[in-house]
Length: 212
Image (cartoon, rainbow, N blue to C red; front, side, top):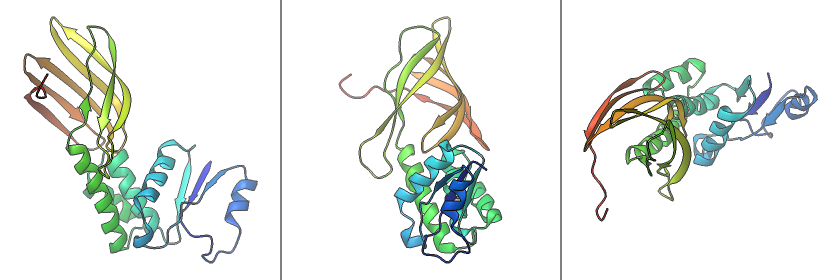
């Protein structure tokens, strides 16, 4: 174990000083605590998801009964690992999620994130012909504030005069990890995509914003 994430308040009864013990063992200790669904804010979801994405592994995420940890785990699996909500909550319940209020809170948070993403993650530009081109992916803020610019690099291959854009295991904050191949010709596009547990085809018409 390299990181311990304790969701319990320090005022909750405990038989030992967890913070001191974890530090003495040379591990990282984090305490984004909440005691009920009402205390489970978007900020706590964001903080714990960031820890699960970036902290040194193995990670121990715990509370007292695993119900609080299960709510966080469901949101992480759905938004960061690409699972459907149904699959994510099933894993969370297997891990210990029992509270209907916590499940409802997590579902609402995930829904807001996915709804914002569905409004459109837009690519700012495609460069000239070349092997790899930098782009900025604009992901809408789930809270309705400013969009978040996520710098990524896309592989752009050319079949004659037809560009084919590809990503492999691309981590998109708030959405999950995805692999895709999409080709563009005239005013249409088509391709395939896949997440951790799902995927499909995509196709449509390219329309320029008014004024361009």
